[in-house]
Length: 444
Image (cartoon, rainbow, N blue to C red; front, side, top):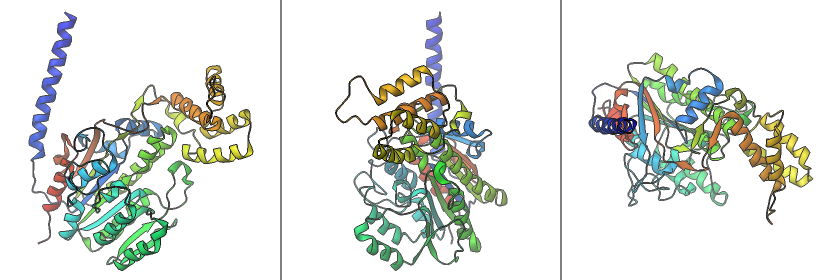
């Protein structure tokens, strides 16, 4: 009897999935006649549903992104299937076509594809690109670059220079040092004014194009130095809204991905909260312009294969600095040849761990001096990795990988035409939906 019941439940679920996807297929072709003048696309790089959930638990209360009324799930596979990288996924979001991993703004054959941002610019919209990682990194670059490799940083900057976008804000560009002067000249020749940001929001002239940047450390290491992702978003709105022009802004929380690659739960939650603070800036704008604003919040993929088990949110905020910073400290420990007990205490302090159990101490000692010592065994790094794992376990986090996963990612939206984004669909459908919003208010 139980066996029959289980078969019935599975059958009903399969039927529901098929019916749901058929309904979504109809939704993909949906158009609308409402006018959206201001479109925000927020991309939390590497942010799956569990990264959202942990970020919310760590700080208590709802994240702003989780309050948006329209809900969806998005499939992220690249051209040919498998697990996507940020370049392929962002290209799908930005340009509406699936492509190969590492490809930017080109289809799987290498042919350039126009992004929604470029299309909007041609229609008279103002365009802003904001990111907490370098502005010529994969996700931001997908909106203006056309390259066969995401690693072509200098060439991507050349694409940025001719994009004619109005505002770039966030982390500094990656530039090949041998060609730095030439690259900077390329930006200047295309009338970009480059400003190295400080704690103060700079004043920008409405008729000029800007790159406002500075190196942005992990939020947990930030110590309130320099502008936050919310600040760069606020500055972008201020610059693009001048003269009441239509605008499109893409904002990326890129270090959610970086900290998830490191399986650094204590740092990751701060990146999620920082990203959410930027969304709050857009929501404040939306409250003033509810009949002409659209906000979409999603991710390009999930990173780390994060699983949850009885989250201890109070422990997550005990970590003092990022895993990356701890690795920098290891160089000093090695140089000074600090002994095991001293290094252990320093690591405990960084993770906010006051007392270790007998079992945990045994694991740490085995990491320092394993039963079978390999020739290249780095006891300092092994100890730190073991301590990180213990910290994650104490917090109720289990990372199953160091790379991306194939998990579907959530999307939320609010505002004009936001019903377009409900349902379940492939990531390239996002670009087509955005184009519907933008074309609806094209300047005549």
